Image (cartoon, rainbow, N blue to C red; front, side, top):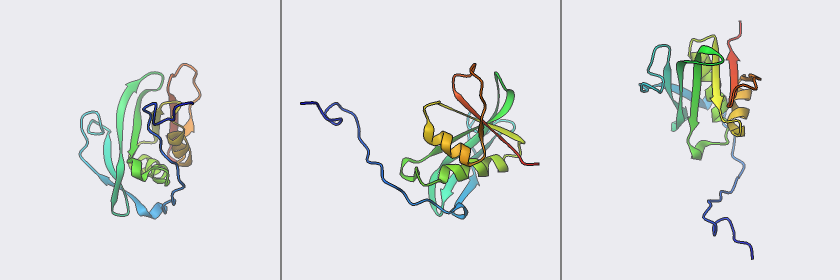
Length: 143
C-alpha cells in the first residue's frame, strides 16, 4: 500500500474557491520598512489591507542588478489566509502606481505561478531574457 502524503510527512492543503475582493476594498497604508524592505532612497513600504484586515505587505527597493541596472524592484507577500482572492493583483497595481517610478520590476521564482498571474493582471509583462534565472516582470506607467 502506498503511503499517503501525511504519512510521508508532507502537509496537504485543500484548495477551495475563495470569493474575490472588490478593488475598492483593498488599500495600502505607508509603513516604515527597513533597510532591505523599502526604507532606502527611492524605496517605499506599505501594509496591505482588505477592508479592516491586514492582508500582507508590499515594498519597493531601488537596486542595481544586471541585466536591468539600477531599477525599482517590487516585492509582495500576501498572508496565507488572504491568498487566492485577488488582493495581490490589486496591491501590485496600487504599489506600482503609488511609487512615483515610471518603471517598476518584479522578480520572482519561475515556478511561482500565482505571483506571475497576479502581476500580469496588474499590468506587469514578462521580460524575456534567457540570461535571467528568475522570472522578471516589468510595469510601465501609462503616458
